[in-house]
Image 1 (cartoon, rainbow, N blue to C red):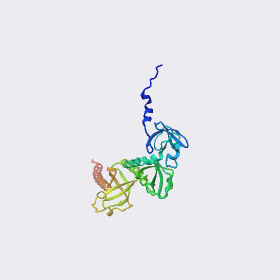
Image 2 (image 1 turned 30 degrees about the vertical axis):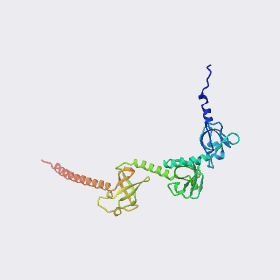
Image 3 (image 1 turned 135 degrees about the horizontal axis):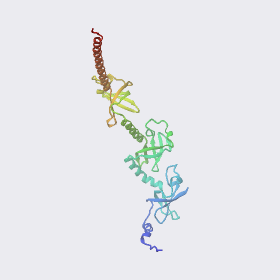
Image 4 (image 1 turned 90 degrees about the vertical axis):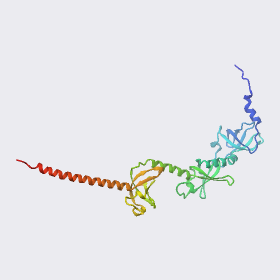
Length: 305
């Protein structure tokens, strides 16, 4: 059996650890190697292990060291003390959250990143949650697309949010679920619009009138515009001359360019007039045919002897 010859490579980790210097205030990356109810032990790739007390892990009152931290997890923490008297380096993830969390959340705001948070409690005019271990506020006006009378109904719910205010000096962190909900609703609306087929005749209700046209609710959360030039055959100055709010109308979908629905009531009038002309022509043809047939019948009835 070939004997293994030790080389400098075998002692690389030990050598790196011997030259490394860890000082109070440093933010280090460490791997969790053991977890108990009171503390977590971490491998710092250093001659001494790191210790984080359960109370120094997070500001979140619902954070559980046994449920949220596991051996093998890699975390960042701040060095509080280089020797606790037992040869351990004392760390604080909570402190690192305060230092690193603000930068992460500032980046999240700039990049409009969507975060998932859990609502912990209701306070005056909103709710409290935590992001990157930091206490955050969601105003009642930013919880939903609709008016929220009682924010407490959101306690325990997970929400998708965006960061809208980050101020580390004032420790002010404000999130918005409404921003994400609005985007989701817009995506859904655009999808429904994409399913509409130009040329289709729809029924709807006039929602509002402007000088340039009428907005018609065609159902399924969709509203289309009938431009003033597409309301009727005759020239009108404003839609209110022939339409009123609440009136039921039929219209033809002209196009859905740029996720906007263009409608025409006039197009249906043109179709109706065209149908009327065809009916008149058919009636005239039928009348001529009847006259000719009657003369033929009369001749056919004559018997020559």
